Structure formats: structure tokens, C-alpha cells
Image 1 (cartoon, rainbow, N blue to C red):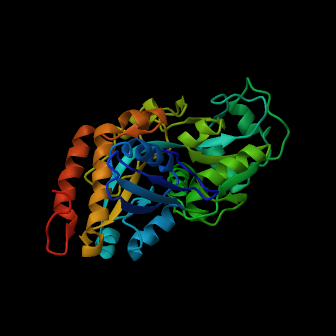
Image 2 (cartoon, rainbow, N blue to C red):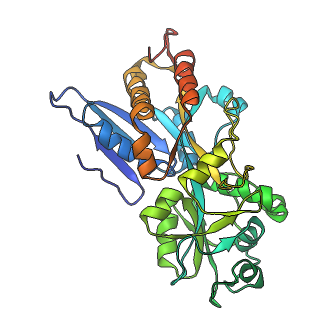
Image 3 (cartoon, rainbow, N blue to C red):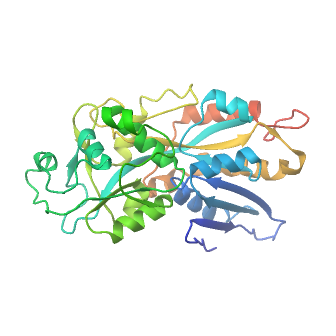
Length: 345
């Protein structure tokens, strides 16, 4: 089976088993953050399951809109909805994997992980108050690197994005002016810069524009061979993005609260812009959608059981085993058909 991507990040994964059983189509839409791992899971799931997964990587905002409208079987968002929002929309929310949002730069001759930034300097860059790479504030953090006298071009998301929510949530915690003037959301009024659609679009822009800086999910940085930065965490320790630094940050998560935010966590090894990505489903499923919603849950159940190696290969981090156990129990309690029966027994 071949996995096909369009320019906007649409993939259609078709699964046919040896018996050519009738295919159930599952539709999903939303965050570009987890699109690579959903694609790889879909490819491997398809070897034994007659399911067609159509996932549109359109950004978290689009995913929330589509699941709210009932046009897809599941929505995907890196911005978790609060309990009140879930109740209002009749939705249930659960995480799938963890990952890092990383600053990436286009500076020829600079190796990945060699430039150091902290929250104040990163915020100043995205505020547009630091405009050159050899600014004294950047040089003070990078005494051993020859930085060019080159204009900084900020690249940000143009669409409603959970990756943007994670990034701006972090900046709001570490940069008072950012919190006051810009704030934290899936879409914000950017003080400066150019917009790219999806993690894919930002990655392409950064690759093309010399002197640029953007932010993407870590797997996009690796797959596009982008130069990511080190970042000072809450303990003022400079760390690089990695599965280990994401896991370190996740130790402090309160998973009992559906509104789980993992930015600026304590711990000397923690990556400061860590986030989870979530699936949204209707709690009361219409009769016409029962088969496809059940197939979607079975797909994610398979991924929890069998997808850890795939996740690791793309630099995502799997959820704790106890959390997965709780999620499975919640599926039975929360997602039901019109008669009140659990969709997944």
C-alpha cells in the first residue's frame, strides 16, 4: 500500500485484507502535528484490516469545526478542549501521543541543536523586537557561534493550529509582553512574520527562506532536515528536543484533567514546549455512523497496543500504560449509540 499526500496534507490510506472484505471508511480531520504517525499507523494497520482511513491534515481549528458539525468520525486537535466546551459540544476527548514543538532556523553552516535560545529571546524574536541574528541578546547565549548580520524572518502558522496553541501557551508563560499583547490560542494576531499552512507549510517556508525561524512538531523538523535549536527550560538548563526530554516533561502531567497542558514543566531534563495531541468524538453516535466510529476506535485501540515502535521511529512518545487503560474504560462509558450501548464492547 502506498501512502499519498497532497499539498495540503491530505492522505488516504486504504486497507484491503487478503479476503477483500467490504471496506469500512473512517473519516477524520484536524491537527497536522500527529499526521505523520497517523499515516504510519494506518499503513501498518492496513495489512490485516479492511478499513479505509481518510484523514485531512487541516489544522486543529478545522478538526474541531468538522467534528462539531458531525462531518467526520473524529476530529484531531493539539489544543485540548476544556470540560465545559466538551460538554457543550457533546464530545469526548482522549490523547494519542506526545511530542515536541521546536523552533527551527535556516542559517547555513549552523548545525541542528547548536544555537541556544531562551523564552525571553524567543519571544522577542516573534514579537519583532529582535530583528537580526547577531543581536546582542542572541550573541550572549551563543558566544561560540559566529552569527550573521542577517535579517530574521519569522514564519508562523496561517491556519487555526494546536501547534500554535502549544507554542503561544509556552511564550505566554515565559514572556510577559507576549502574554499581555498577543496571548495564547490556536490563532493569534502575529506581530510580525509570514504564514504557512500546517506544520508542512511552515517547514517548507523555513527551508526556502534563508535567515528564517519558525516552529514545527519535532518529526517535521527531522524529516525535513531542519536546524532545530536548544531551549532553556524552567530550570534554566539548555536542552535539545528528543523523546527523552518530552518524556521528562510528561512526568508532571495531570491526566485526570482533560485540559492537559505540558508547556514549561519543571525538571532539568524537560523540553519546555511539550504537548499532547487529542482525538475528539461525539459521545452519542448516530445509527448511520456506528460502524465507522467503531472502526475508528478499533484503529486507535490497535495503535495503543501495537504502535509504540512506529511512534518512536517518528520521534513521538507513547502514553503511559495506566493512562491507556483508563482511556479504554472511558470509551465504554462515554461513547455510545442512540440506545445507550457502548460502541466498543
